[in-house]
Image 1: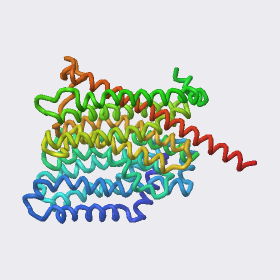
Image 2: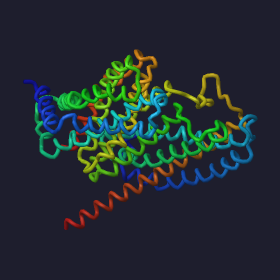
Image 3: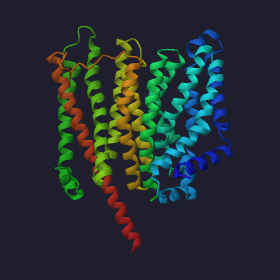
Image 4: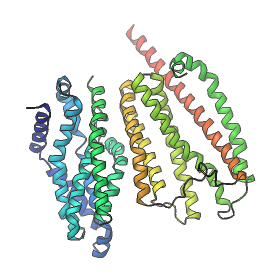
Length: 216
Length: 240
């Protein structure tokens, strides 16, 4: 089995046995529930402004999973093992990101469907919202890898990760919100795909560089 | 030229007179520029007296972006050639850049209230400036939360370079998103769209901001080098 597959399986199994997407899904649902409480339950108002707020909830939910991503590996020595492996660290970091996307990102994107419907998005738009969230999660995770890696040795670095990563979430949120509002859906989806590809290509490189410094 | 600055001893010699000289230059330029911009220069035919905010606002905006570019260059040099001085330069520039960005946001808001009729508008340039300010905060936060100085320097440098790639992307995406702020009016292909009577005090203010940045940067770097020397001396004293 290749190093990529081993890392992917290990991380996926660890995340899944640790509750998997359950806690992030709960977080996502809770944050979505607060939206109508803050805006008022008026259906017309929600239909006009509600659906894009799914993106805020999803961004925060995935952000909360980033803190322990590399910290646990740094503490129990798994990271040292990865550095000893002949496979490039970038590939292993990418595998960890892919596992996070499968264990948490994809379920969150699917949960975007009921959340968007509850926030009065038109039914015809829901598949596009789910697709955009799936792409957006890949972009968030690609950027989040960097934030998680540079703060891996910081104790209680959760707030710091949020401060570092949230500004970089701006482009996916902008185009994701455009999809959720039904504006220029195809082109926004294409740009989101571009964000996801760019983040997944560059994120692991920067994250691996940061991890090498900390395992020394 | 770069490598001659990489020697901390030579840098301390150079900065011991350059820092106060730049500080004096900054004081002199502010002493000329501020009264000129705030009292002598003409009021705008449309904006009236509020145009004077521009003299404080525009240099802060362009230098806060320029300082980030400077930090990016210093981070690159620090990562690739492992120059300690480049790391110190990047770190020392960050709080100045963050302050300029905050000043830009603050004065822009004060100007927006009478001119646009709103304190804050979620338009492309305002939002990307806010993003820049947040990136500064994240950079400073990362650096101050890691104790090992050398490791903190390298990690912050990686973050700075990632931010450097991302900034134009964020800027273009928010520009696409919605826009109210006027486009650039000084550096244009057709020449400046602003009259000489306003351009001259603006240039003096820009020079003052640049000198202030240079002076603060050198003072910060000197303080950082002194701090390192004290720590090294302490370690030596503890070892014997």
